[in-house]
Length: 282
Image (cartoon, rainbow, N blue to C red; front, side, top):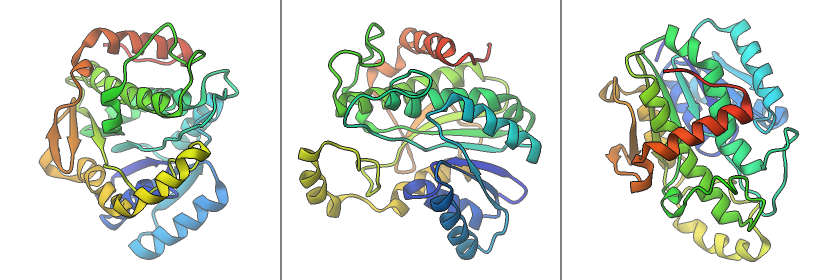
C-alpha cells in the first residue's frame, strides 16, 4: 500500500480505527475522516505510534452535514492528488427520529446519503487513480428490510432497528448500482458485513435494550476481527478487479434477494441525487 492514499470514515474508534491502523502498517497514506477533533487526534497519535507511519492525517467532517462533506472534499483535493481506496465505514443509530441541518432523517442521512454524496464527489479522483477501490460497510441486518419510498425517511412508524436495517439495505443497493455505473473505469465497489462487533454503534439504542446489549457484548467479535475483511478488500491483490460483490469473513456471499433487483436500486439512486444534488452518469 506504499504511495497509496486511503480515506477511512469513522476512523477514531471501532473497526474504522483498526482498519486505519492496519492500512497504515501496510505503508498507506491514511486520511482519517472523523467528526470529533479530540477523539480523532488521540486515535491518530495512537495509530502513528503503533504503525510507525507518519503519513496518517486527521481531517474533520460531520457526515450529517452535506455542507461539511463538500468542504471536506474541497480540503482533501487541496492536499492530495490521488485516492486509491475510499472506505465508507461510519454509521450511527438513533433511538428517536431526529433531523439533520439539511432536514433529513439522521440515520438515513449519515448511513446512506453521506456515503452517496462523499463517494460521488470523489469519483473523478478515484477514476484518475485507477485501479482504485470503494469499500462500503453494510450489515446482515439488511436482510430483514424493505424500502418504502413513500416513507423513506420514516416520518411514520419510526423504530430504531427498522431504520438501521433500512440504511444497511441502502448500502448494499448503492454498492451494486454504483458498481454497474463504474464498469470499465477501473474503480471497483464492494460491500462487506463485518460481523456483530463490540463497538459504540448502539450507544444510542433505547434504554430498555441496553441490558440486552450488555449481556450480548462478550459474545460479539472484536474490532480487530471485524476489520479483517475491510482491510483485505482495501488492500489484497486477491480482489483486484472484483466488483459488485458482498463479502463476509474474507469470502464472497449472497446478499438478500431484494438487493439484486435493479429497479429499487435505480430509484434509490434518483432519490439520493435529488436529496444531495450529486450523481454520476453511466
